[in-house]
Length: 606
Image 1 (spheres, rainbow, N blue to C red):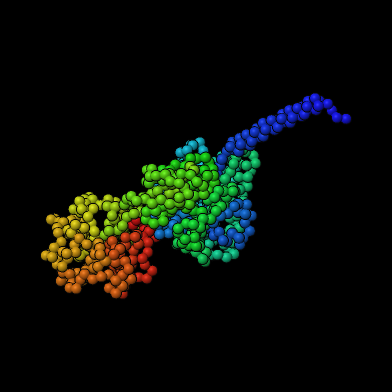
Image 2: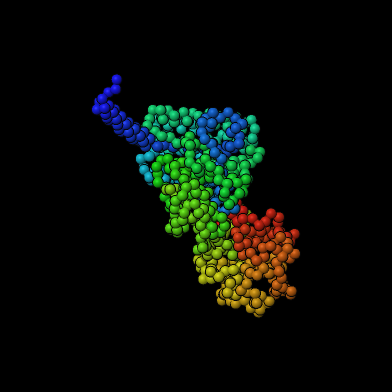
């Protein structure tokens, strides 16, 4: 029987009100639930475990049973900086672990090798954490003790540290720290895999070492899991290595694809920087390795998880692997063009040497700086609270002088940023503390003309000559270490017969085993000067080509400096930060040149 319309309306209204109340209740419940979920998420104490397994080649993980590594998301990365740039560093443990713990490459942290005499010049993750909140606890357990030596100015920021001993001992100390103390950041270094690689190379012994490292990792991860289950904590676990290995597995240290290849594993999903390979980068070297994760991404990832704001003044090299993504794969496309990849739109703020330069759309992907200055120029890109940085050295070597010092075997290089470097030829590296300013204290009588130097060479065992770009020259006494009185004077055909017409064109000069000297001019020609007869030989200038200078012909107009090295070799420096090694005995350039001037080829020169 049909109900009366009024009753139907009452029932309908009652039902709608009920449903409305139910929906309203559901909405409030959902909001409360979401609020509760958010509170639970944000109220968890953020903590980080960073485990470094020394010398573990990523490709060998699949050869072994690694149940604990298999719990992580593992991605390929690279170490060693970008070859041929200021960031290049050896694929060795010293620079590798220092980069991992500072977030920058060698050109900033200054640890070039495994010698514990070196120490980091920049802040480490420990200092970043403690300066943000001194109540946060940090801990470091390093089986290879030099890691702490490199950070010896940072040890005050570590609440608990242990070094040396075996990997098993490192695990024991780490578990004790996790079980009985309250670390907010714990770094653990395991060394056995690298040691076995050095002694046995790749093979069954190496694979067994990986399995043992994985078991140790599992023990530490279990201690973290116990904390997660019993405490209100949100742990980020990162596992990485400091370098790859050469193809046999024994050694490492060079710039090869295998040695540069590392990995980064996390227990978090990660962002676009972690998950996406970027193949659009301008540098395709080493099979496009630079499209992978940079070793420098680890520290910004740690800081992001700990909710520590990243400051642009830190000049961290890479964006985080979790959270918002900043500018990715920042590098120099050429001498004045910045390149980056962006996964999201927005404005990128660009800072040059910590000073605001400009703001551009992130999707633009490049910026041309038309006002480059001499010396190191650092660019920091700020996007989404993340920073990415790159440094370019825009200096040229403008003069080289072999010194009258056969015991210490030194050479001096002058740069167009008005600095010079004393270079130890025996050790093949710049002396500590250089470059320094060229002035009348460091070079008495030369300082007033430091802006004019265009070339230099040693005439005899105790006299050197500096040529200035205004057509004058200075005679320098190497025994008294001062310019001779009365200089500079103008180059004339009386004091340099045959050279006067070319005095303002000289860009390089070199003594050719004490019988001839050569002057190289800015128009790609050269003069041969007879030291015996003290005059320019007839028939000069001549064109620099592959007949007159085999292997140098294509670069005649690019020469900025030359330096005599020994009886067999000399070096030519070019205006694009490359150099050529020349064999004087064979009278031709050594094959494989030009090569870049960097910390591998000329340590400390630029």
